[in-house]
Amino acid sequence: MAGYLLRRGLHLVLVLLLVTVAVSALLDLMPGDPALTILGTTASKADVAALDHQLGLDRPFAVRYASWLVASVHGDLGQSVITKQPVLQAIQQGLPITLEIVALALVIALAVAVPVAAYCARRPGGATDVTATGLSSVLLSLPAFVGGIVLLYLLAVVVPVVPVGGWVAFTEDPAANLHAAILPAVVIALGPCAGFFRVLRADMITTLQQDFVLTARAKGLPTRYILLRHALRPSLFTLVTTAGLTVGGLISASFIVDVIFQLPGLGNITVQAINTKDIPIVQGVTVFIAFVYVAANAVVDLTYAVLDPRVQRP
Amino acid sequence: MTGVETHPVAATAPGATRRRVRWSLSVAVAWAVLIVVLAVFADILPIAGYDQPVAGAATPPFQSWPEFLGTDDIGRSVLSRVIYGTRVSLTVSVIATAVGLGAGTLAGLAAAYFRGPVAAVIGLVSDVMLAFPVLVLLLAVAAVIRPSMISLAVLLGVISVPACQRVAAANTRAQLGREYVLAARELGVPGPRLLLREVLPNIMNSLFAFGFLLVAFFMVFEGALDFLGVGVPPPRPSWGAMIATGVPNIETEPYIVFVPATVLFLTVFAFNTIADRLRERLDERWTQI
Image 1 (tube, each protein chain N blue to C red):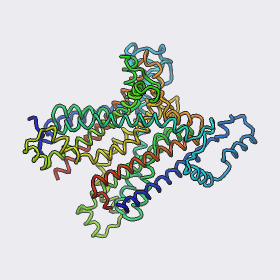
Image 2: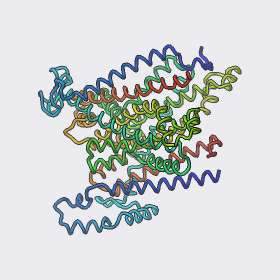
Image 3: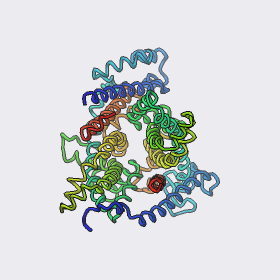
Image 4: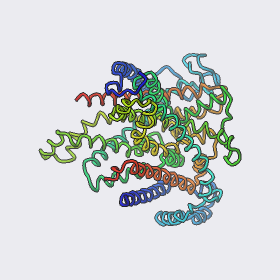
């Protein structure tokens, strides 16, 4: 186990290091001069050069990357070129909102997918199963921005029951906070929910054909007990992986609902930073999200190893 | 009949599934063909240009011909714009798929066949690329360089290489233990030739099915970029951008949003369905052998 953990840990560090190099290099390769953007095209050459020097843009890429890396390991991701706000502080402002929506979406998706999949696996090809499977194909083909707008239209225009858009902090008013978060979370949960359903349904059908299920039936155990206590757990492996991999996709999708529902999450912060060419913010957010993504995958790997010791083999 | 079905044969009701398969596949293929034909022949169809006002602003649908889908807020035909929008969507997603699947297949074949350093390097590069928050990064890149349609397509293709590589590698590994591969090895066929001439034709069908899935994925992705305002630059109409511009007036002119949204959804649905059905058929074939 220790050797496995060490190997995974080294792999994790290497991947993260390469991610930061790639992000920095890509942002560096982009044409357009941040100093010119900040000062406007009428700025004099001397002013631009001075600002370049102040921002450190006159140094070679390797030097800039190295100093950024050293600083970021110490928790300093630099500061916004425009507002002078530390990048870490900007991330801290947007992160709770993004995390809440992503977590809520994951919970919603799993809470719907698991019981429905278990129920459908009971009798594959039955009316419920055919309906649910068909519906899952529809949801998987529905882009988040289309689903978001349809819900927005239904709830804001056709049946105006939910106030749409805007954000209230949890500490201010928990009920209003949940109210604001639920619609964006549902929107980004639709696709993953359909994906989870398919994965778990397929695995459950396979599990239900095994002998121990027949034994349980023969003992006269109630169907619900067999489904939830006997068949569910051995069917969960693929679902765990899929759920872990989905976290990254949910974060990306949360950027879109940030824009649709005007939430002050990481998405809006990033879109604003992109429009003003605020490279440190974009760099910080991108690296941070990559970090979360890689960490989520590592957690999935570990869960796997704990659930099934055979995984440590390679 | 309230209990758990434990009998293997009952896994799917064969007759019902087969009928559903044929029916949904034909509808999906018909819609996909229609979309492709509209995109290819947009210039010679009897429709207005996508950038000329043809009637009063914001005419609702079914009021005039041939603009039966109505006009947008400056009087341009929604029908024309949706049809020209298919061009953008199809061009980007098909080129991106070709790039991603092409490069990913070569990398996947190599990763599966050559163990050791080659597989390790390909695996590491894959992991790094998969760790990227792709949408975020694309937003950043697209916002600064405003890529043309082609460069956007190539960019999307490159990003999908790791996923394609994994699919190709998994399929290749499944082939490597088969007799024909062992026979070719015994005969001394060199590695690259074995992979390209023997293994590749055998995994082509699976990759083809995966390709349809990719086209659908890229349509959504390209639509999202357009929706966020960093996709293909105007005046070219694209579905995502049409949706985004219609949102502020959604209360009074919902059709401006819902026409492109419906077409996008149906097209993505069609491509996903084709991919699903192709995969089902392949699975059936393997179990028959």
